[in-house]
Amino acid sequence: MSRAAAAILGLLGAPAALAWIPCEQKDLVPPKPVQREAPAFPQAVREIGIEGSVEVALTVLTDGSVGWVRVVRAEPRGYFEQAAAEGVRRWRFTPAMRNGEPVECRMRTRVRFALTDAAATAAGSPDGGRPQPVYPPALLASRVEGYAEVEYDLAADGTVANARLTAAMPRGEFEKAALAAVRAWRGRAGAAGRHETRRFDFRLPDSQLDAVPPTMLASAPFPMAACERHQSGRVVLEVETDAGGRVLVARILSSEPAGLFDQAALAIARGSRLSPAWRDGQPIPATALLTLPFAPERATCPDRQGPDREQRPSNRPPPRVTRRDAGPAIHDQRPGNCAERGLCLSRRPA
Image (cartoon, rainbow, N blue to C red):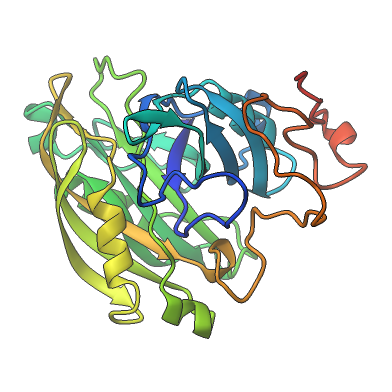
């Protein structure tokens, strides 16, 4: 049975240089999340089976609350912007510090809205040509819970091609179960070329884990060489985590292209906190698989306008971030369509 989940992902690129102080600035002790739950998946969107992601820029105020919020990009547009912005506004941090004093700063994050499947505890008949992974017996007996994520392409006849793991916690049997199930999937013919990603949660029948900590990835500057070449890529890592999901050690398993994004990937991994593995309802240390994609169109390269940067008249004073939501926080980027879907976004009062 499918259910919805949202994951918080840090953007792979430094923020554009604006009047706001970037939270990653070297002379700052960056803010730390105190309350950072993943935004709720919109029920109306879940029912029609759409997944997506939203990039959000926000300011962390001196009291640790969130001030200014703006949606930078949404894929697809018009479905998840409001849920992402409303969820981010509820976050709380310890404020950024400079010389012992709290300061306001600006950061970016990406919230992913994904449909999640629950693994079966025993083999069953295929559901619409898509059987769910079977819970590995050894992990079921030892009461270990975790997850695995697979990406794949659909061939012209509806079969799955090029299936590969992108994430797993803990490594091992959950990966095998997820891959075996996806490779046996059969879809509708005529969907050739479609690329999909699916995450499977392995939860015990009596699991009490209704809400688990989301994955929160750190950020790192996009490599200059990749900016110059307008080069995309990906790095697959194996990481050791503590019981809270904090990455202690990171090892590169593969990188495309070789070596270009390795240092950025290691920096991101070492500053990240993953959704942990569990045993008998308690989080445990584990080894995980983590894939980090790098896309130049989502980075701030020096030769072009940053994705979250606005053109401002030179005679306009710098914006202040102490006033919350001074203007419309978000907008539907497809005029005329949102009313038809009942998903128009309204102005939030200052």
